Length: 364
Image 1 (tube, rainbow, N blue to C red):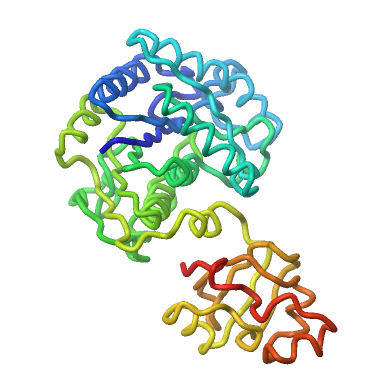
Image 2 (image 1 turned 120 degrees about the vertical axis):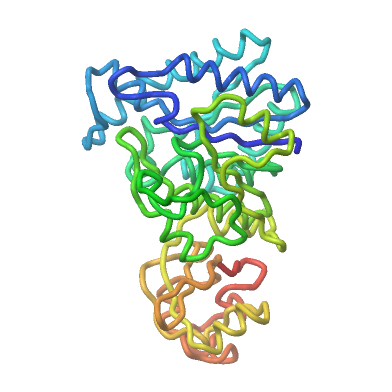
């Protein structure tokens, strides 16, 4: 394994009461330095800015008020990157701070620019330390978490593995606080059953829990990237992992990975609307690799324009695909259920035979 994305959660290196835990962060950065010396190229995705800022603001828990969260992130981010820079400088390692928002990922040009920047840093032997740009990104604070960002980054830099450091050893058969809980050492596929086992709880200072880690593993697996969720509080696990030992829970990558551009469509951009498909269209898309034609569309929801991402659902509401549309929601409303030969007659013009071309469509 050559390139490793390491996601470090707030509850691993910070708390609202004490701010950054320099001892724990120092232990992690020591291990990061050791694997660099063994030829590994690490990319760190680190939470902790808001938790570090809460201490400086005199707050004991994560506030609900967005302005306070933004203020905490602004105050804490400088402490966070200084801590990484100071800790890794002891081992003659250099770091670079990279702050991203969903807009940076959703815009294709900015996505490519971010990729080029990260790859340049890596090629120079510099360790990128990535976080969401929380002080200016309201939606990211409300809905995002760095587990999902880490999966996006893993795809962005074409990582060989994503490692998510957790406050538990990995995914258990049930809450590890309960008697009889067993560690699941390997997950071949993230199924609804696995998602249910993970639950949806988070920590007091972070936004994610095991559920978001499992969803992130699924996303990275789709890119063809294996994922390990393991304890971030035990020493030596990173070294043991790169030496080939089994630690934590291993999520096996998808055999037929999604191409980079389709991965960006699937996970990098938000859907602006929804189209419901009949059974024939679902079969053609999922089983035959066909494009979405207007004849297979039953219903349209939301407002979207040409080039926007649109989710494709079957009649039961299950999401089956996502793609970039050739027509606006108003236009799709007019041509839904029609044959391609009727598009120009209905609209007075025609951009394409397909509502979503298969090159811009990814099955989920």
